[in-house]
Amino acid sequence: MRFGAHDGFDRVVIDLETAEQPGWMVRYEDPPGGQAFDPPELPGDATLVVDVVGVPYPADSEQPTSVPVGETNGLSVVTGAVVAGPYEAHLNFFVGVDHERPFSVTYLEDPGRLVIDIQH
Image (tube, rainbow, N blue to C red; front, top):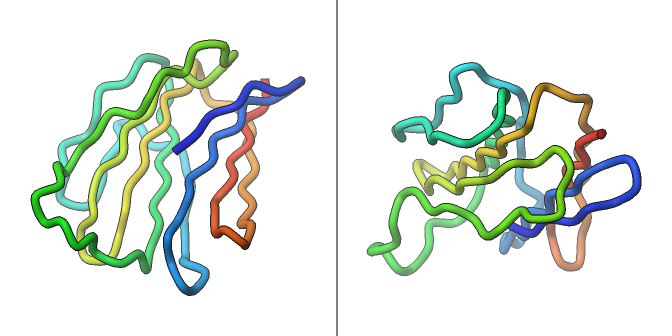
């Protein structure tokens, strides 16, 4: 998961290592939930939940089920992020936002990635 600050929006990029385009659903949830995981505590008044379906289970079964993501310094509206999963071919990404804002989601290929732009 990567972040970028742009004029008018913050960008969250989720790099995906799948042979085919996965499915996804992105929505605000209060409180946030996930596939068999406790909801993360993130700063901000809203949590954007990204559920990616059809991802392979990693070869390393010792991976933790919840991982905080790197710094979000320099972003205007994104306050933090956590990756949870995998669970039954699902990965959940939780993105803390200062409050609910309009967003768009785009899938890009070569390499596969999900791009979420959150308006300032």
